[in-house]
Image (cartoon, rainbow, N blue to C red; front, side):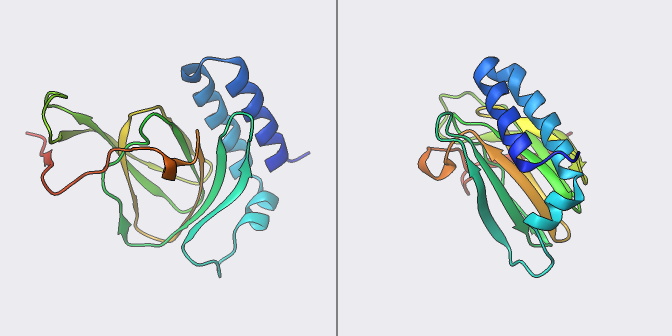
Length: 173
């Protein structure tokens, strides 16, 4: 029997309720990878005619996490950001999401941020990655991609870090 969205949401709820966040997130990410390789789920969730944007597939009212389907347009490179006090899990159903993780290198007392790249990799079909609260990362889509993102809450309601003009990214020496 194929792993379904309902199976995933039930498993995610149980893991997030029973375990500390640092333990639960990688396990939820692993379950998401099983969902992303189910061709029926992908066909029911995405199609080639969908415009770029996001849709809510599921909202767990008790724990307040969201399962979102994103159609990402190609040729798009996001700026470094975090999800504030929340967390996120990314997974791909089609194409590759280029991911870069960043680390702040100046004191938190400074008004601006100085970032350096700490890792860079791609998430292909069926691959997932969890990002805990405060983890600074950026995404890149060289071609149109179908992405599932799980968030710990409605991120539009949280204060979050976004890269600004007065901030700078330090090049690796």
